Image (cartoon, rainbow, N blue to C red; front, side, top):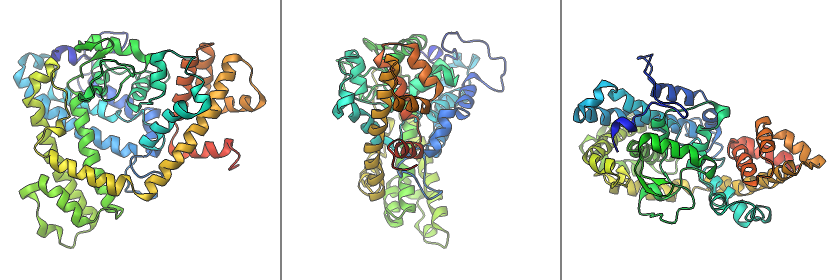
Length: 441
């Protein structure tokens, strides 16, 4: 792979054009398009770790995405500065700010495909097709590849679909779409090797297969199998930004909520901070928020430096496609991050309020899918009962239109219904379920 192709500012259906506004590059336009989009705004009420938060300091998917984007921009600029020195020909068309803007935009969008109730929501949608009789009935109405992805709802693939849906008008650059895609392969992939980070999950649905192929061809990603490619190199920085943020900031939230003591938080961060850790200052009269803020800022800065170095040390392997690991798994602080993850799983991710709300997601989402997929079936057959005529009016106008545009196509109907349900916020999903089930009027 080569950087000139990988930094393509072209957009789907068009080649790169000269930058007529030097003060705002095509990649910065990507960032702006995402931050003003409706799917991004909905992240405000989507679970990060603590569902339906009552406290203003607990992160949602929105604040998490903004912070990941900020860290991603720093990683991109740090890497870009060195890469332009290593490859002087790049300086003709690119600056370190272009690298930063691509990683920032892709990082900003990295959670757009997440359904209500976080990862539990992904499992709940998958379970509808695995265990529910109505969900199972679609197995012989779709292709083998399509069925595989229905049984394994994947937020990353849903995110790629959202970024390319015409109704949102995002039309991002090839470079940003490439950097966004952590898993450049389909759900049904016989050559899958889960020891490779890029193949642990999948990154696009069959409905976007042609779109991703165009992206991969334009960027000249290295093909590894039928419909599967190596990652865009900047994807490793997007992944690192996410890994850094959820490791450190989820711990910060856990400490603020009293799930992890401040003393334990210090001990978990100490192997990363090393000599920068001043225990005397931390024992002073400053409040908890200020102390945690200082610890977080210093820790993230150190991890950015460490991951930047790992990327630069492995640039050649990344470009030839032989590198396929998380940067945080190779940095000098990997054991400290592993310990933080273990504590977070035990004390934060399995906290009672988290488990309770996740459990409700396993009722709410399959319940919505049952009602609205039956409505979709009736729309395809053009035989709406009074009940499903009413339910169809609760669907977005574009969803009903899109279903009617593909008569007899159960797969696309299901994709449109899943778009609607996975796009709901936590509160909207819960409210809609209560209303259509007659629990709350």
